[in-house]
Image (cartoon, rainbow, N blue to C red; front, side, top):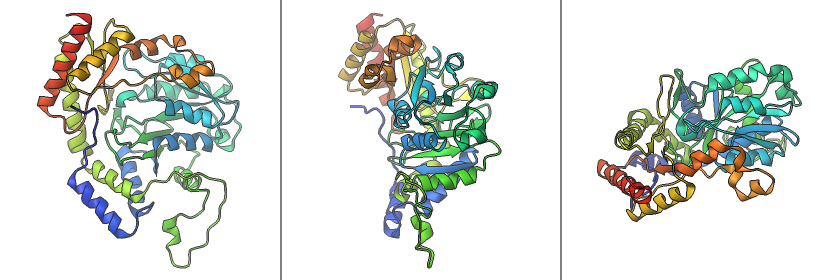
Length: 403
């Protein structure tokens, strides 16, 4: 069986993890702090906080910004449930909007229609690692400053809607000469096991807030919020006589460990030289072959302004129903090839249906989802395996819909 997305952990990562285990420092410590600085240097943002997941990062930023009951957060209907769940955790209302028919990303015109006096945050999602139209989104929140109603001190300081990018997929992507992480106010990456760069679990908050915010001050505040509201972490308390600490707020527990961070450091060292070129090569081979078939709608991976990080290969089959898509997937698995679907849109999930959301209000999202099949993309996928995947896809599609 060709798997869908196994991690590639090389010997150096294993050796570095052993060093950390032997060091006596396995929770948040020097390697985590180093990793944060390396991410900041790589992405070109102002400051970075590593956490145990991207989900924790999204929620902690919503809470830092004072998002609460009665507030609204705009996000695409086409995303993973975590993007919406964190809004619900804060007591706010997720306001879903439709996506583009070309690249799966949030439709900027639909964002503008959804803005109200209750809108506090826009959460674009870089689907498959392909950045959204941040120039347009960043301009949109400036345009609507006059209608923004600020409640918290942070909202008053910002004076407008916050753009919080769900960049879970897009570490290493480019947009108009800038890396993901430096494209808007705040971006949150995922380092989950299936991501291009993994720490097994984990994520990072890339701070890039405009003046008058001091991003380093915000970083320090977030360190407190994500470690029980404690004003000193374990590393600070190791200094001689520095044991005393205080709890300054009822915080959360979502710090990254040094075990996780050191895996990320090794992954980052080889990211541009090995990981991204390999993933691009795989996606290019898929596109070269599948573009010859009239039924294949291949994904956009690169334009003059944008280059994604090739996290997913979301193939769409033209003119099929959801039932036909599912039948094609079943046939592909008969060839011992694993594929997936990204994602079942949140308004289709039973909980969200139960509170009144309806996928029919998002026709492009529904159409994209109904025809989407994600092909396997991972570092150890060989040319022979690529040929097997392509053969399985072509034969399965032709069996279900004909040549």
